[in-house]
Length: 194
Image 1 (cartoon, rainbow, N blue to C red):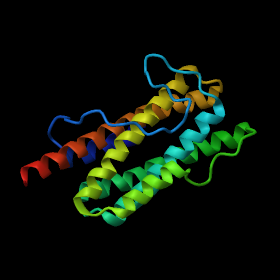
Image 2 (spheres, rainbow, N blue to C red; image 1 turned 90 degrees about the vertical axis):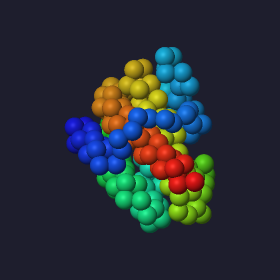
Image 3 (spheres, one colour; image 1 turned 180 degrees about the vertical axis):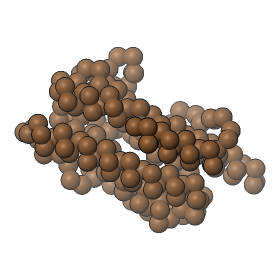
Image 4 (tube, rainbow, N blue to C red; image 1 turned 90 degrees about the horizontal axis):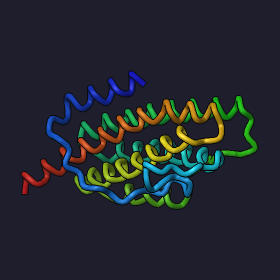
């Protein structure tokens, strides 16, 4: 956790100095069980939580790989590298918990059609439009992931997964804030260059 926060802080220190100015974005549906109102968490089914968490991590890694290939912005390159590393580690932690608990559920091994379409859309974009769209999708995905982790940490049925969700939520929050600040920075730069 500390490493994730320090990594995010280091990127922010070099990349962003202005306050946030991002309006609310439409949200990515990571799971039907994710609450739409943070004050009233639903009781997510464990299989829904696992599916959504795995799907979110896979999406983050695949979208970040596209960003590494397409973006020319060094801040986005660093953010993408961090997403690949951090979401890979989160996925590994979840896989270890699932292996120990022997759930009667096989987590997804590839993106669902919704997330695959988002990655495909990113692949079709170039330059500044890519950077904006990538960061918008990062914000949307991390907002949904944060709700999911917080909801499961509060009312999930499986104790090891609740602990995992509680430990993961602050990391996801740090990534969300970093994505928001990078988005604010690139839109501010784009508006000045017009």
